[in-house]
Length: 348
Ligand SMILES: [Zn+2]
Image 1: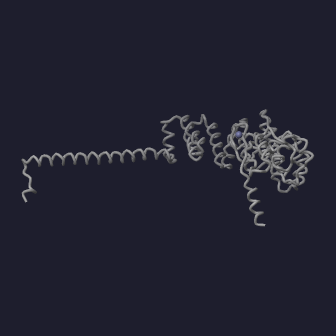
Image 2: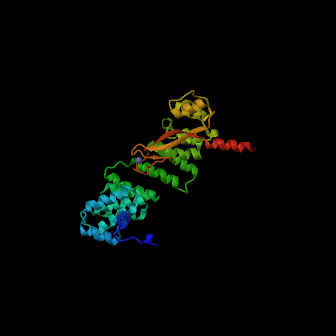
Image 3: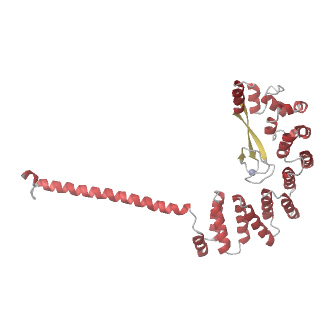
């Protein structure tokens, strides 16, 4: 039993006490380090969380009215949110600046608010803002341009065409806007018979020589004969996708034979053998493959004005709102439909 009792002066006792102290110190320093790490992490989380959510309306009002940040700083912050696509936050800031801020930049702030409402899809609110700006400052072309856009997106083409008048008075070139609106108005007219619609579109095209894609896409879909008859061959490239998808029964061989781009396009598709090669890389490969590989053409559209890319054809760029600025880009893709037809045929 004496073995279990160590005397106070025993050197073994000192060693045990020594190791016990080391153990306690190590344990507390480990625990303290862990506690600090957790606290730091929580503090950082709390700090970062405040950037994820905008202050509430009341907090924002207090912050803006306190003047701790200048109005310009708030405008820069709202613009950063706008560019990031966080339109809701941007709208809240603009609204609070208008409620609390000085009236010196009210018109500019209202314009930015109208733009943000438009981008966020609140067309009615955006319209009201631009109308309010124009009530006090009718000679503001930027607001008129946006009001026109709002009416266009609301499909109120008559109202949009009315906006062209004050723009004309301000010496703004509105011919392309007018052509575009007339084309949209014709296409959306539910009461106009299809034949009359085609006539009107041809008339618009002959007069303005613009908007080839939107006009000929409709003509090739509804009246291919008329489309071939009025097709401006120098604009064949922008219509590549429409021509590529044109039914083989609707092809006008006489016209195709007269134009090198069309000869190469339909030789690449495999309908004709009128070209042995092409300066267009994608056509050249498809002509040389002669249907031996499961390949087809892919299309994308690039805005010449802002360089944004879309997989769909457009007449007005959704990014920069330029009209008729699209350029077609070609690519070689796997032909899924070809495989599908072969599979379907295999069941017959
Ligand atoms: Zn663009």
